[in-house]
Image (cartoon, rainbow, N blue to C red; front, side, top):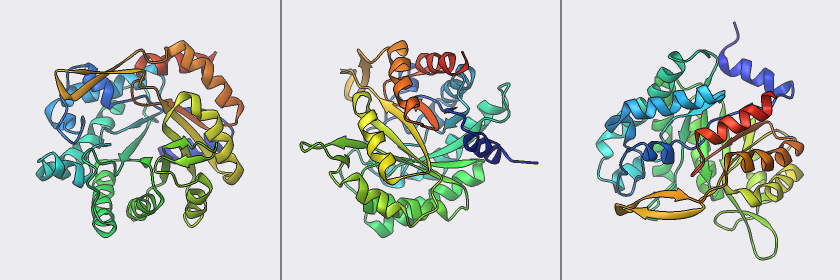
Length: 303
């Protein structure tokens, strides 16, 4: 019997556009989960597990066929910066388990659970490459043991750390998808967020067996140009999960925020039609965009 990921891969090969979820961090914050200083909403799996599970279930109910664990901020260095490094194993394990439980309580047993991995730092203190590789290797192993079907690298913003993170994730033998965060410089060149040209990043990724690269955590109005640049040097599956911060409003403390004035679900659906015309294989959304956006995308894709 084919496993969930193999079934998903067959659908992608057949040309189906697969819907993933929307933002989890901002969504659980909307529902009252507090931030950890220097680790965003990474503590939710332990402090508010019912809320995290509910968000995953809501995304599945909205039509998402892939859900990403709430572990974007659960890297060892981020948790160390937050003073909760002792919960590294528990937060990553429980983060994946909650997504698995949400699937088990849904009507769709084929939903794929992706373990979300990032090396982003809220303090700017970045671990050395060897240290990062060791921690990612451990994090990925925990996620596999917890039931992840896939590993999703998120917000890859520079080549060296992207490759080190990829090396660590691939030790599990699970499929690994890479989400890159892009910008466009003043010369009109599509770059990773740190300024390295996208073609250089794609050249580095040619050394790996990567099924899918997505443009993620990138502003909506930049996506089409980023996709065009990606397609010039990449012939594998492609995905989009854009963000739209709108007016970022501080609340309660300098460490917490909500996003006001973000793109509406129907407007996001309309711009996604253009991305679909660029032959993407996976579609969702991230920071600031939530369950209603996924519902709008699902209505469009199933119409």
